[in-house]
Image (cartoon, rainbow, N blue to C red):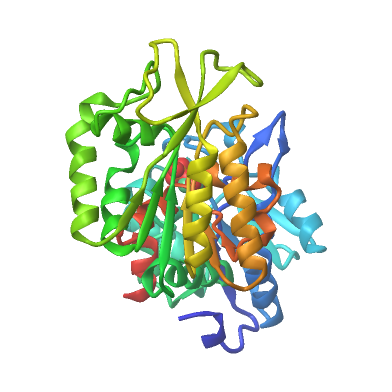
Length: 388
Ligand code: 3PG
């Protein structure tokens, strides 16, 4: 159920789970995307006459009151974006009764019952509202009281951001237009095993980049020099390759690589075809131009792209070249209506921002861990609770 299924909320309080776990440096919010994505839900509920009571977590205080992890700093930032008063309520013990129509409660993770999904704590939360709205897709992989337990206690709805995330993810992997292409990068295979296994069973093409590609190259007998490589996962990499071929998913592994001996920006580097001998001092930091050409050729014929993880060490130019070229090509294809491109998880958004193409993607998820678990094919408890 979505907010379109809710009618008049005059005199009622909508308890809304948002994800305000925002990046902060020296007390300043460095990226307020997660505040901005909550605005449509808040505005829609206000338009329907509700008082909006926001629940959120910040960081990992582990059930204790940690003053530095208070959510108090978010209320004024949200108020500025919303253009109206946002009160801050330090206690979750009772309903806010002040004049503001929007209230943000203190970090739910200050309570030990939150992460335990304690029934008593969920009841305490449920008493704070008449309906529950989950607008925090990025926290939906957590079966916590504010993301799961409370949804069973009062009428529960998906908020606007949650709905947009689920629609986009469905278009990317649930019910996509084919051919489908996945790009998965990042440093380690070990953190993305389930994800790779799920993707090869679903996609037509899968490009593997970043440090994790080295493990695949090594498994095939290629020299990876002194590169990051999980040699103990050789058999696992071979199993994933076999599963891909069984499922008719074509894997694209690097055809050429950019190698350097120093881990720093603008380090002296050279491009080598895979199979060339490398020394122990040589480290692979990016995919080479032939690989990018091949990837773009596949992308040109694809209708759907799902992207998680950079293709190289994009933080250190020129090792951002493959990621930036692929991102720009994806943006071009998406702008011309040929491609539905959905991206998310961890470093991906930072990589797309670096390439300057975040706004050109069809959808960029605000989620890190939740996006990965969803790509693994897992049921997210926060989403399942809304469907129950
Ligand atoms: C996130 O930032 O990805 C979410 O808010 C979840 O946070 P968590 O990993 O601390 O549960």
